[in-house]
Length: 256
Image 1 (cartoon, rainbow, N blue to C red):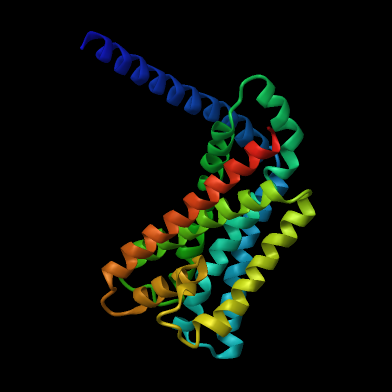
Image 2 (tube, rainbow, N blue to C red):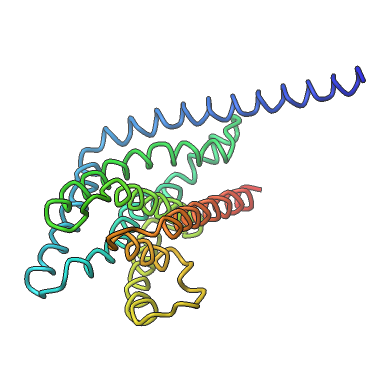
């Protein structure tokens, strides 16, 4: 019994130590990354201009194309997904040499990725909050403003996870940006030719954009379907987790 308790104590202590090291490393990296981000006003301005551009496109489309507001709301998932993907798609590829040097002094891949998520989650938080706040004056968010923001924020985080995955695969920053843009264009085609006509039993609805369509449809109803909302939130979290795990595996394979 004593030996068993001793082994369990050692394992527990090792887990606590590893978790502490993980958050300590990611915290130090996040501070450095935050200083670099704040020291680049052009990049911060670009992030804010994205929100202004998206709002402008949606409002102009509604005004000149006479598209109903509830139809335009189905474009919100794509807009916030692009914000997250654009913010993250060049992060790893431009720091590949720096990260390899940091690995030599003990920086782990989970700590490195966690630092990226910590900072980028704040960036997309501000972007989605600003986007929803501006659009709430024009579009029918009604009494479900919190759910719209939560949905938009989670979708942006999925975009961040996908952007980091693209950044881990692509060889340079331009390719990463083009790959993210191509994926966004594929979403547009997917919306028109697969989701919009209605495919109720298709597995395609469980893709990020398909889930975004279903959640938007549920939120536009007078009484939102709570099961659809929570199931969609769960699926979005699953997509983010899958992209994160794939990114970690790719980084380990590239640096092994």
